[in-house]
Length: 133
Image (cartoon, rainbow, N blue to C red; front, side):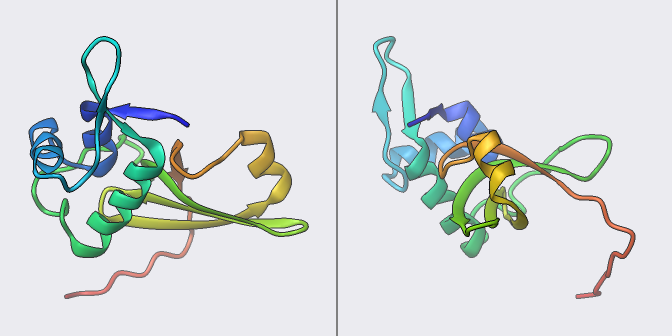
């Protein structure tokens, strides 16, 4: 299983490394140390924590998240993969955003997508709705 440094986790959660470090220090997400002494977070633990943060708004609004100039790329962590006979559903938590994609099972298998992996959701749409809050 893939592990993430505090800095990598912070980027995936859409917060500063200091915020991610404080969350780890407070025990909100489990960490362990590698041979070099760096703190790491297991991918499955980070996936579960990212869902919690996204649902509770724990990272939203703390800082400005910069994605790409295309404005439609959402780097995050895979939080769920549901495989059917032909189709599949993949969920990605990108900071406070939960994205769900329906794609072929073959595509999921070729990409090797698993819970806890880093992935980027790219969105292209000709029909975008905007609601005023």
